[in-house]
Amino acid sequence: MSEIPSETPDLSPASLHFQILLAGTVIFLVTLFWLTDLPHTNTYETRAAVAASRIVIGIRILGCYLAFISVVLGHKVLQRRAQSRSEEQD
Image (cartoon, rainbow, N blue to C red; front, side, top):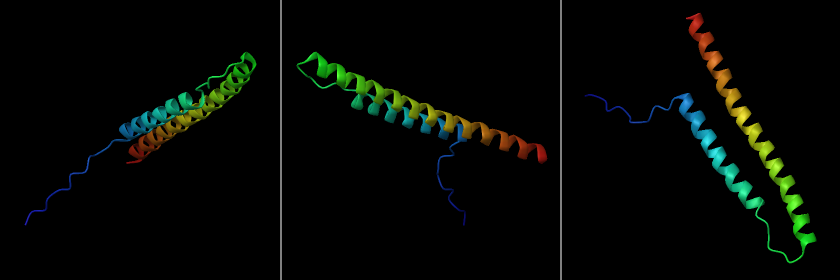
């Protein structure tokens, strides 16, 4: 009897890194727009205070996103180096 091969998609590491970056980007954008949405207020002072705090939140979110990107890209580079070293040893 012949065995039926399982049809699991062969995802390359580059494809996985792209999917992780894409998911992180979508989460970043949703979070950024959700947290920086300014409420409707009547006074200029209240609006300015809320806007200043939302700007700080936006900068923090941007920092987290940049850290996320650097970790994913760093993992990709380290994985590529480890793979090239293992190919050199063979």
